[in-house]
Length: 60
Image (cartoon, rainbow, N blue to C red):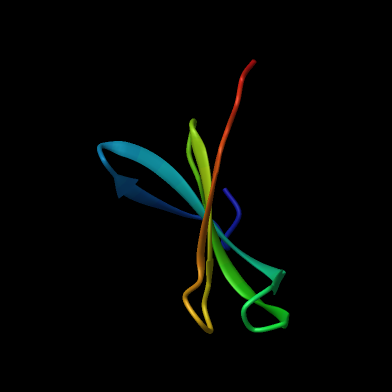
């Protein structure tokens, strides 16, 4: 596993946590985000302003 990845527990499911540089609409610039992914959703959290976005995966 890559050194940048970290497994975390959430609701008894394992999530993969990866830092990524992404554009933050609230900060209006590129900032580092913590990206957490599990089987059903992807979460993006800005490390500067803590803006939180969720994307629910659709399999249909």
